[in-house]
Image (cartoon, rainbow, N blue to C red; front, top):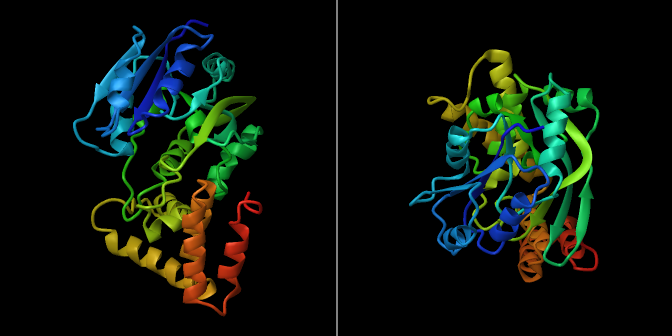
Length: 316
């Protein structure tokens, strides 16, 4: 195969990892690709470290201010030239055969528009965890219809260029899950497959977007219910609740979820943040959060269970 593949890499304050991420792309066995890096107004050394790598296959863009993940992805999609487009986060690593195997998967499955892979999750302690995704094409695509969690890792995807016409968007009241919203909307027009090979290495660290907890809003906890709600509303009633004028409906839905959750588990938010801190090896922060949960509701078992589970020798 000699089709051009556009590799898109959004970057923000990832100076510690981006050179390794870039190197994993440049060292691919498949040679006909372009790497497009878009720095979203980083305030660390990300920009200088990108420019330290000289390769004619790299195109670099910079924002003077941080615009957010959806805007950067839309900007990247607007400048791709390849027939296939592959996502690569700026703190992750690709297997040397990743581009070639995903491109082959799309070439051999002409009715499929997006191909993912199996993933290895790793952290700074050297711990590696394999994440196995669904290989049945029918089960994978049916999950979007039945509102089961799609068994696909967004960062592992390669797609046909036509798929990039679907824009990313900000979500009302929720600061995460823009990729899941995008996947659901894409699934209504396109089909997915997963490769059986482990081709993508996802780095778990406390600065990553998916693990940061300091700026997380209470509504973010319910991102899955939120995505299912707006997706079902769009499919059944033809109404996009993210359009202006539907703020009241969305806010009422989220507030009702919080009330219901607090009745069943009054310290769910503290436990959620404690577990996230423990995943990032921030043991002191995790312990303080579990102690706060106990202090707020000393007669509830949830806080004590949380404290026990976040201990380093118990936490998984």
